[in-house]
Image (cartoon, rainbow, N blue to C red; front, side, top):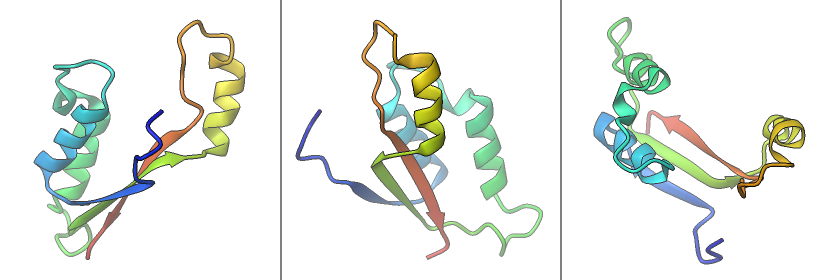
Length: 98
């Protein structure tokens, strides 16, 4: 693990920036992230068609090494015996209007 990695990143929000970020952390190079159900859902949620003032996002903050109690529970039961090395930490993305 890279010890010089920042614990968080601040990224200007746009649909393309979100897609680019998700592609940059994907295990599968060249994956069509923008066609994944959850990515489509997020992008439609933030387009603000139902109420433009409600979902006006300008900034994303990414926590690079977040310790999630829920993920640790899953890790303990599913990944602990895996032959592949899987991180015990996850990334968390926050979305802000400012």
